Length: 616
Image (cartoon, rainbow, N blue to C red; front, side, top):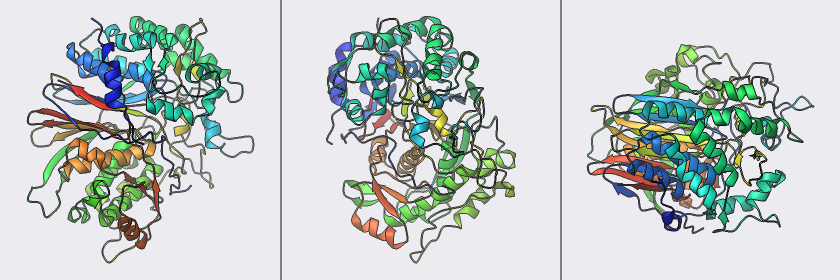
């Protein structure tokens, strides 16, 4: 029996897609992806299993896998294949991913991050004038394409934790690719503002009509080329993508770009290996607001280690906040429900500046860069976080530090220069719990919206194809600072670029029981979107949906960024009075979360995107 029930397609779309509408500091405040409306989500209760994904058709594919007796990993594979088709701007088989998995006894971290071609050097993004090229010039074309890792990673995880046959998990995506799916409101919105994708003839003929206009909402989009490619992968495994004629089509697309060719080779694809890493876990003591009678609760939070910077940055922010009076400032009434007040936001954004300064200084691929003091946990040592927290001005309207500098974990001397400010984009998130209690959090990406704007097609007479990542632009374009000191996250052949992706699993420290799976897309904002949700659930006692609904806020070690139209003017004035440079911007998170309840599970999906939660 096919895993997907195509008769659900129209109902699912209706339910999920309704729309109402340099140096240490980071000045980049542009949102990772454009807003495409805000549609209230109810939150969903289930008793046995649940899947949360960024598109209702993808969530349905995961649901069908779980209902057929599949594991959380099985469901994630089904979800990802459909996302390649229906959310191609964010993730797909041409990109990379991180997967955190819990099997009831241990937590594992699977690293499917893209790698730089072996021939790449630290001058990859240096122009003829000896300076880093403009960001978009680095993005569009073959130069930015890294070796895709998502399929190899999923294949590795399936060998360990799959219950259903690999090929069966591709049936939903193949069926949708061959019979078509309606263009969603979000896809239409993002296509309408996209220009560079039109420069690729394959992508232009697939995503746009003859007049160069984005296909309207509801247009039936058929992708027979992707369907054929997925059939090959279903029968031959990840090798079908990484070797043979599909691999050759990828390499040809990259190396023969007319304006910006890249270095990816057949040997890069054939030689790629996903990695199984030890997760990065830390203890977290969640203190509810002091006026609440609830006692402090102890958790164990696990995420990805480097090359992801997400877990470490979140852990630093939460740890630094625990050394302040953050627990004296509960959320306050706001324009739509509740929101953090000015005093709490001051403490949070100051903690964020400190975390992002360390991130720029220390974090990169651990196969190329050593951890400070020989251990990444040095960045989370209680005494180190306590020292960092003392840099935050408190009481009496103490001013913002505006820009933080990196610390000295373990009192080590700084061996690298900090990475300059650089944009980060893209991504999608999946959270799943299966009927056996296995759980996962998977964040998956092609980086910028629409990746490198290259659509791979083998040229056998079928329209469509799949998009390639621009993941190499997550490396520092500049390999050194003005003094010649190297930047940890510079380009090197075979290296994985630093990521902000932060799939998270939360456990009760006393019992070891799973509490929640969560994560978000959003470039560097992923760290803040995920931290917001964790704090809302663990500290403020909100359910997953209400925590996701909270207004977004951030600092990337520059201005204080608030989600546009979601905070009272009094909050903004109070932050300005403390010297914060406050900017209101669209902050289009795509959070998903599943939390354990006494009756089973409760899932939340971000009202800012199309996601839903399905389960029994």
